[in-house]
Image (cartoon, rainbow, N blue to C red; front, side, top):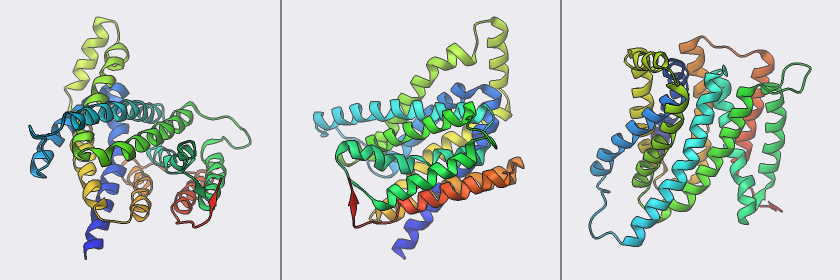
Length: 305
């Protein structure tokens, strides 16, 4: 029963994050990629404050100064990585990538993480090597135009997004055991929101009075705020809390595999809510990337250099 509760929490996080791709498409089209990420991240920061109180994890005056310094440094580094990752992802979606395709390309971070881990002297198994091969074949079908080798600009941004998410995951893996993970996420969202505000003012708002007025008008509509509130409250606040509760005393390999289903839910919600569909070629790429994600999570006894 305890394991079942863990699985339920992780699946709930998957569903929330999968649907968030739809919110990113609709909300980003209205207010702009950077504005959407800035506001959703700041909302996530505000939502996590009461979560810290409810979970009884609020920092106290007795907290060591070194712990606070580690929390601040970790939150800043994770926030910078998240700002790059989330804005690259949002730009890829805004430029026309389907939410399903964006979900699967983003999920490639599961393969990139162990590869980057090699530079940290962490060996990987045969499953990772096989997963990388399957992913490369799948990405060809998913991203390359039939008969050519050209990548869409949105595809390149989403692959860079996967790399940035891999860096962010490794940073969290390093800092989370040292500090309160919810507090770390709270600082992370604050940093991400502040950094996203810079291009929001420079790009989304424009430099003309008419551009600023139009941006402000779009920001006052429900078409903008419903997706923003969902992404901020549900995706950042509830989704992250479910992840923490789901990973408590649970096998991390199994947890990673379950969380990789986020990409499958992104395809499902893109089909249900946006009537998006994939061609046979793209569907083959999706299946191969998903197979690569699963293979990469299989525990391997033998290690490769």
